[in-house]
Amino acid sequence: MRIALFETITPGNIGAVARAMKNFGFKELLLVNPQCSHLDNESLQRACHGVDILSEAKLVGERELFKHYVAGTTSKAFTRKTHRQAATPDKLGFLPSEAVMLFGREDNGLPNRVLKKCDTVITIPTSTSYSSLNLSHAVAIILYELKVSGLNKKSISAGYRGEILKRFYNLSDLCGRDESLKEYLKNVFNRSIIYESEAKALMGLLTELEKQLK
Image (cartoon, rainbow, N blue to C red; front, side, top):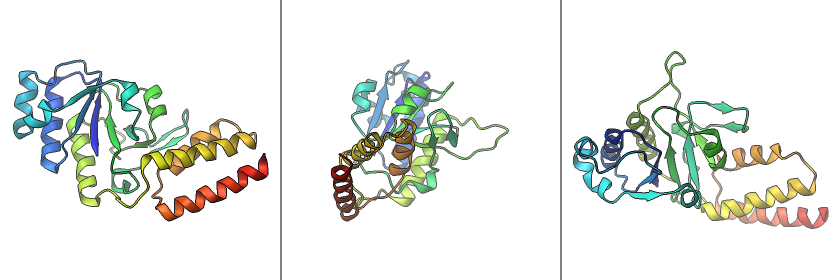
């Protein structure tokens, strides 16, 4: 599991995230178009024993980021515009082990255009009177839940998952359904734990359905 920070503004927050990663045994940090230096003195001081994570952090762009299965974080449990229902941190067993957990800017979080690209979205339930969490606190909460539950090693890979989802999209097109259905399919499918035997059965069924609809 890799942790990615999107356009982070404050170097101290990057350092604090590195410290939280060190606490929970996560090593790979991706910085997507950062707005500050992750090797700034403030960042290094806040990282404490996580300085090695900062030194090995990788700078990436959005194109490279979305070559992977990405779970984006959001403050909204449901986003009507993108038809996304967010999962909570205690239910992350469906995530493939190679997934990237993406956290947004300190001021505005992840923009809608980025959330739309994410394979799934995660939200941390907070008080409605003050829902904004400090970046490193949000990261620590999710890393704790990942550490406790563990990642499901037996679930299919992100690549295999993507292949099946494309088949569902194709069926939707063959049936002449509205494009919004694809967002619902993506939302439901990417929140599911799917084992290899189940995936093979699904692929077989989808192949037969495509033949009948063509």
